[in-house]
Image 1 (cartoon, rainbow, N blue to C red):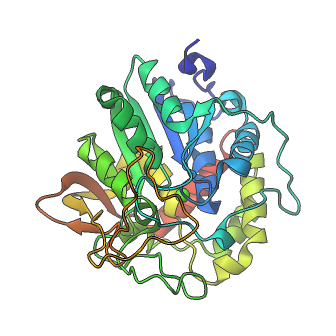
Image 2 (tube, helix red, strand yellow):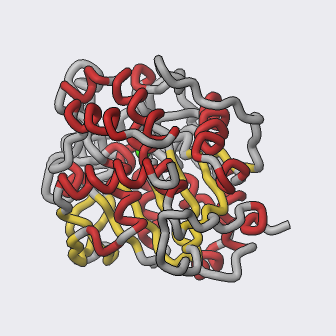
Length: 362
Ligand SMILES: [Ca+2]
């Protein structure tokens, strides 16, 4: 049975007065951080979206265990047809290099005071790249991909079956930093990192980002340039809590309340939620076409590999130590690949659409 049969198109909701358009087919690849959760729930609540597979980018914020279970429960929370969407999980380290996500930021739980997620059958359909390929192979219509974590899974998929990229309509990628500093160096946690130019998703797997860019599939990049202007504030969390009229909205409100210190710190942004909103409505963002080269160069000084991480890549070759100062940088360069870059969206519009989107369907 086709994945797309397993994930029937969402039923029309009473609030939708206009005739339903043919649903757009999507795969969501996520590393399931707090902001991913909002983005994923926005996608699952959207009217004209059919999700064929959700895959976990385990080289990012959340490993397969407990990520697969968390994803299963979030999809049950979202309700409707997406509760049964197949889930895959991928490699827990980037394709090359030794960059790792800080352990102290990994999220061990997803239940919050005032809201326990529904239980769900623990299910994992396949490895993430294989599930992405199956979803593409079994679709007779173009499929778009929303990529919210490191691009490891997509890079492996396109390497295994390059021809299937023809099935991809567009990839919307949260990642990169063009004219603003990177975000991997954070006081108190990652002070030891010397990279001031890369954004986390591209830093964790620059080789994968480069491979995905080189496929030539149309890409919309949602970089820090756009998301830096979009703080997720305690004020927004309060408004969401007041206006929450659905379980997904109430869950996100409980999640934000439990993480209020992070919101008050001023460091949290609408990273992945913006990518989801742009996926759902490309017209939301002012975009510009840019030629971008992702830095995946090795370190020049013969730095030895760190201890405790695999010395081999998935292809059996030795891992390289990548340039500690530049790996993952998204430089504007005529030798790069042409992508559409989202540069600016008004904060009030983002906030309004998220509250509306989470509440959709009641
Ligand atoms: Ca993410």
